[in-house]
Amino acid sequence: GQNIDQPTEMTATEGAIVQINCTYQTSGFNGLFWYQQHAGEAPTFLSYNVLDGLEEKGRFSSFLSRSKGYSYLLLKELQMKDSASYLCVCSDSNYQLIWGAGTKLIIKP
Amino acid sequence: GAVVSQHPSWVICKSGTSVKIECRSLDFQATTMFWYRQFPKQSLMLMATSNEGSKATYEQGVEKDKFLINHASLTLSTLTVTSAHPEDSSFYICSAREVPESSPLHFGNGTRLTVT
Image (spheres, rainbow over the protein chains, first blue to last red):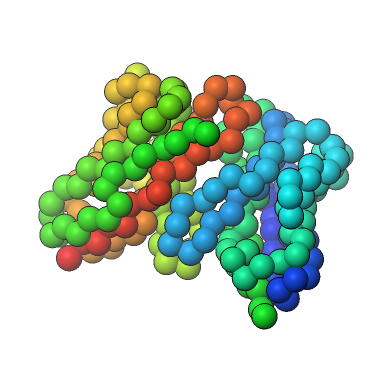
C-alpha cells in the first residue's frame, strides 16, 4: 500500500535549526510537496521536489532522495511564527496525492 | 500567484438544514478540485476529488449522498452538506490544482461549519 511517515511532533528553540523527516512508499513517484499549516488555517505551499537534491528557498530548504524514499524539510533561524504543522505530500504515478499526517512543530523561546 | 477563493468563511446552521460551500479558482482553470475536512487537532482528511464535468470521486467512508459535490465549470466547485448534524461541524477546506498535474495545490481559506 501507499504510505507516508513523518514524526507526529517536534520541539525546537527560537533561532535554531530543525529538520523534519518524511519517508514514503508509493506506487510510482511524481514529486513530493511540503505544506505549512497554522492552527485554524488552510495549508500553504512551501516546496516541491521531483529530482534528487536540495532545494533552498530562504530559511526553508527541502531535500529529496528518490532511491531512499526520503525527504526532509530544513528550517533555519527558527522564528516563533514557524510554529505550525508541516505536511509531507507525495504524488504517485497517477498524480494522486498521498498525504502524511503532518508534523506539529513547537518553537520555544 | 494562483488564488483560490472559498466562501463562506464560517457558517452556523441548524440541525437538519443544508449548507453550500463554494470554491473558486480566480485566475486559473482547475480541472480538478479537492475537498477536505479537518476536526480540531486532527490531520487534514481528503473527502473527495472533484473533476470538472464528471462525478466526484469520494474517499472511503464519505457519504456521497450527504456531501454533494458539483464541479460545473473550470473555476467553480461546490460542496453541499445536506441534512447537517452537529457531528458535521468541522473545518472544510478546498484546493485546486493548475495544469500540469505536477503543480502544487492552492488552498482556499477554509469554511468553519457549526451545526447547532
